[in-house]
Image 1 (cartoon, rainbow over the protein chains, first blue to last red):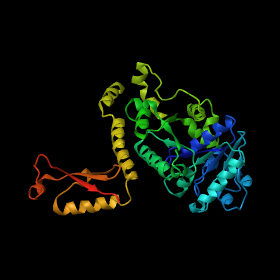
Image 2 (image 1 turned 90 degrees about the horizontal axis):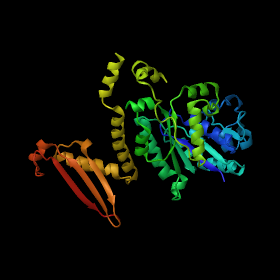
Image 3 (image 1 turned 120 degrees about the vertical axis):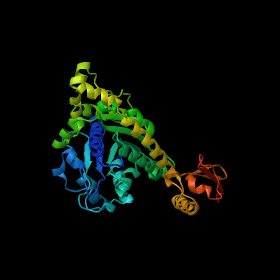
Length: 275
Length: 109
């Protein structure tokens, strides 16, 4: 049976699409047949992050409206085996995502043998975001260590617990916290909320901490999910998160600041901030 | 100079802990708002309007919650009253203790 995972946050710009692309790719790299579905109708971006923007012919809404088959709309990833992308439409209005239509497409993906369906949610708590989370078995809450992001994450958790299909049936949606754009140096200076602070406020188990990293922008520049760059800190942090998602125990990395000598702290300390 | 900055920065207030304190408040409020009945915000506004007719109040100080027990719900409203006006009213309370708590039982149908 397919597991439906929504990647959501409430707030925009925290790294939902980056995380959807990385985690979907990671699941496929681990041998699981995976589809990443872009729910951000009108503002599609997953195709760009995945580097398949020139191969989009049909989209999610075409499939819902039965203007194209699922097979026609699914884009097979060229780099990673077992990985498929269902792009969002660019022009249509967001109400095009009907609950019945979304359910039909998700069922079809499941019947097609997909093990994981990663739903990349739009920002906000409007229709598109609600549709992305409604059918979820698990939710990855992408949060930045910053007040507005944490508050919005709490809001979206409340919605998951009351408005999702599982909630309506009295069941539980597995929730995971993914803390992104984390800067351990700033945390240790008391300038940024730490992992433990965010965990305490949201009370959600931690899936991973993705350090603020130049590799994320570089990856999106070229349209290759950052997880394909195993040398990078963000890429390896995402790989760890995927392992945890698959039930493996992995110690958290990138939470603590690299140890620096006293001289470096006095004379070179500021350099670190430019990350 | 760096060394000076470094020491000086350490003495500045820890902004992350301020962020945490503010978030804990706002999240607690948010979670409560999520579980309350739909009529609650409107009822809260109307109750406040009635109180405002008689005394000065600071709405930001208001706390109102609904506790659900098995067979009845308790509405608890806690609102500090601004000292001056209270004295002239029948709702007498001392200057140094400008707090009035109203407890109201609402039977659920």
